[in-house]
Length: 151
Image (cartoon, rainbow, N blue to C red; front, side, top):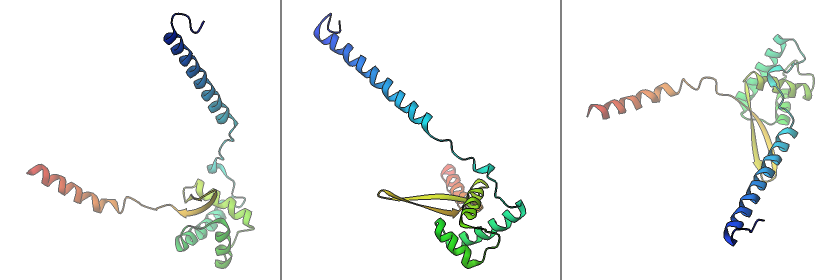
């Protein structure tokens, strides 16, 4: 049946049918991959396991650590927090929970450095006010644009 009506026309039908079949397979594999993934953790709803005022005090001291020492991995953060004497941290697991809570509050960002097959994750501080630096550069651009228009 595929080759009825001429040699070339039947071959085109066969190629179209195989392309449709491949598209259905790729769609099905994509659907299976999507449905089999775990949902991402909603970091905004993480319970810091301490009263909110204490959580903010601990997070402010951890935030200062990140501002002083730059991007840190979790083990390095734990060592720096112990050296700095951050009070309120019960364990390394509690610190990890607070770091997640801080990411949910948009205080920190998580950076992934991949070298070959190994990945290293670092926490760093989000820029506080990126708009403060930009207004200085914007008037120069506007001045240049206005000079071009006036000519």
